[in-house]
Image (cartoon, rainbow, N blue to C red; front, side, top):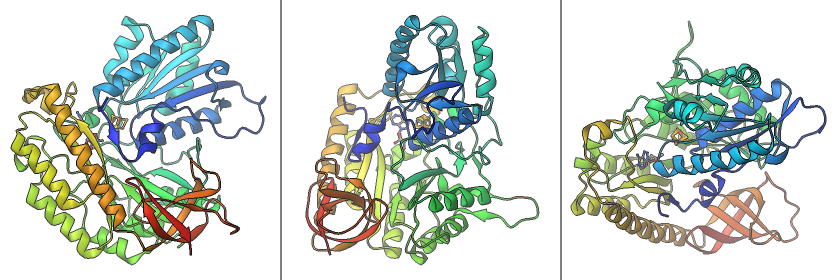
Length: 471
Ligand code: 5AD
Ligand code: SF4
């Protein structure tokens, strides 16, 4: 199925994975929980906050569903396909539960609010339902559910940022970590359910972000990705203290150490400022990579999507980025077959991809989501086969653009942060350059380890990977 296609296979591969950190003492936990996560990086980061809350209560994580007393599934609502997958998993767990009375199943995250009644009462699939702003109440809800009650908290908050909670890193490579800097979204793109599932935008206290990043660095991490639905509208103003903008926050994190790489995602094209671009140029350790979702190349469709920019405006933004950083990696999200999209609109999407020369994109066909502006205002009038055919054209073009972008790197030397063994061959390292391109190269007899930086010359490439040698 082409519902979700990506060059960055690791994101797709993460869907539904269950994670557990290294556990020191097998016997010291009151209960064991198993947590499976879906959706975006924000949602995976939330699972780490949930894990921290549960650890504090004396619960320990397990990767083995059979030894779990609590099963949690952190859900995504962004496309219909994601919801279907979650439903299927819940019916699997219902069977597990039938064999293991006393085991509790909880639904967390973006599907919670919309489907709470269905899950709890109609389908009797779960015992606990918790929305993304209510994780602090999880221990109390577990107690309630143990007492036989259906436990629900799907309240959204205008303040909750979990600023004081140090996430428990689940399945980390020990090199890169995600750090959530804001929650929610105020943009109201007409296709998107996020403003309804995750609520209003709010920024996390700057000092707590910097402290979390510093702690990660001290533990040996070498890369942090600052996460938010719309990072460029980060804005923190505490009483009697100077306001912190996103550019200022980036600088504070970059100053922790030149050895700590800083990335961020996602940028809304309307919000990324010259200040941010200046800061990126000023600090070598801020990676030259911007995720700048275009969604569509047609100004008419962009208006229906309520993206608040035109095709020309977006192209000017790409030009501006390249003016500041000629080698900056740019990536995108693209939707095909939005309401009323014509072949001409679609051709404009293809041509803006060519113009922007994306290194990679996350590509989707439009899936109508309940409660969104588009659902209320427009007809979902593009037949599925047409949406899929257009998506295939977008995917094919992105394949060519990714390959061309990689071919341009032949002969160049990049500083690569090693994040693990190559998946195919243990005698090779895998890492990323500043532009976020995956680089694979033979270990040779150099004494290197995960988390080290090394200069690698690119000798060859595929569509997804640069192949090189240490220089
Ligand atoms: N249908 C298809 N794709 C969507 N996205 C968000 N909502 C929808 C939808 N209803 C895509 C957008 C967004 C990414 C996270 O998911 O491209 O940037
Ligand atoms: Fe999915 Fe959006 Fe929720 Fe992330 S915020 S999990 S993409 S619905």
